Every structure is written in C-alpha cells, then in structure tokens.
Length: 121
Image (tube, rainbow, N blue to C red; front, side):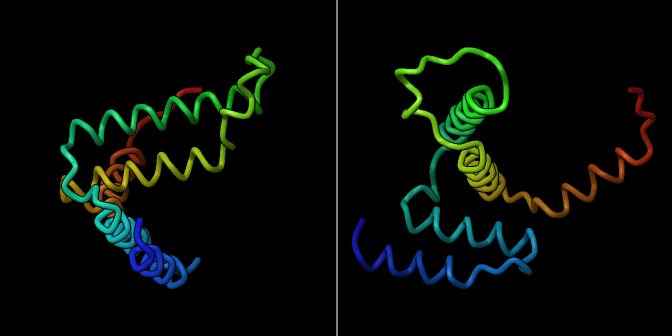
C-alpha cells in the first residue's frame, strides 16, 4: 500500500474517538475499506470473509478461554480474541455498508422486538 494511503488511514483513525457513535464508526470503516480497495467487493466474497473471521474468532476463544486442546505447533498462527472480535466487526460493518444497512438503526429495531419477547433460561 502506498504511503499516501497509509497516511490518510492513520489520519482517519486518529480522528476516531471513544465518543463516536456507531454510525460514525461504520462511516470510518467504509472510508478505510474504500481506501484499501474493497469498497465494491461482491457481497458473496464479503460473506465468505465474515465466515472466515468468525472461525478465527472461535479458534482464538478455544485457544485462550477454554480447556480444549490446540495444536501447540500452531499457537503462533492464532491471533488474540480481541483482534478477532475487531476483524469480525470490521467485516460485518463492511457488509452492512455494501447493503446500505444502518447498523445503529437495525440494532434499535431488533432490540425493540427483543424487549417484547419472553426469554427462558
């Protein structure tokens, strides 16, 4: 990636704040995905990438948060749970951007439905 693109992305990241809304974060992700050349990625490719990232998250959770066995020779291949959560969020946000979905609004809509459901533990 050329230096100008890296500088633009760094500036966008530096402008991101803890106080930003979900909409602002989604807009940031759209900007950096466009800069990286994935803004017009076919939805099928984005969905496959999301599945891959969710699998990597599952592997990271298994590696660090359970008593399940892992291949010790591959430990260096696994990233942290936090890093994989970020990857899943970035790809999910990208998919929402490709489909013109406002993540904040659909979250509110879905939670409005969930409030009226009866949950059993």
